[in-house]
Image 1 (tube, rainbow, N blue to C red):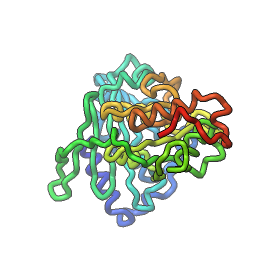
Image 2 (cartoon, rainbow, N blue to C red):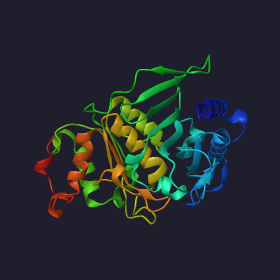
Image 3 (cartoon, one colour):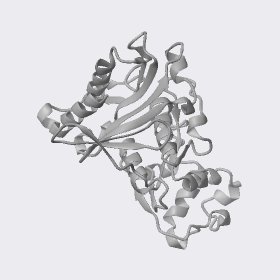
Image 4 (spheres, one colour):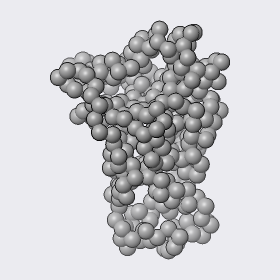
Length: 312
């Protein structure tokens, strides 16, 4: 996989020299638009892993599980190119992956709780190409040296527990959110004059790897909730190859990840491309979001100005 990360980083760095990597290339099984680079990255990972110990390959870009090696002992769940809507804007994008022990068949390998992952991580293609991963106890970070083209281990990110005032959510969807999510964000927006008693800063990159990298580096919280729009009732991010790997990584770093109420790693997907809301960051921050979902209705109304249980 490291070789694919290296080659993809080079391809992205060359940008339009290599052609239009952001051009439309059809749709995936869920009807989401694919970019040329989505398909290139997916094919590169499958080619590189053929003959490896990966038996089953589950990708956002594939309709069903692909068997790569009948003798392999692992299952790889992957979003080969996360954040592809940002390809043409030179914003950080990446790949997200999770590794399971191979089950008796493809579905059994991936339709299981995320706590059964044995490794997870991401590659981020930005000013640096970095890989951040875990095998379940702490996290490791490697940076691609542009001169030697080798991945060099550097200090691990240690920011997930920082009491950061940053939060990430797509605020344009405010009108579609549930009352608890609106109430939570209302209290952040109210700043020092509101029940939280401090000012907060909104961040939104629309690239899950970029959001994760920032939070692991300097703290904060990320929210991609379910909402009232068609197709968003169960969130929009994929549980198997986005939410579960990120949750496994964040928990290994000392943080927490939930669907707003329940831990992501305890959820069993009912199908390969199942979706889920995703909230992750520092433990206290994620627990606070869950607390808003438990408040009585009158306390989460837009006109309620105290919410005393959640001061500061």
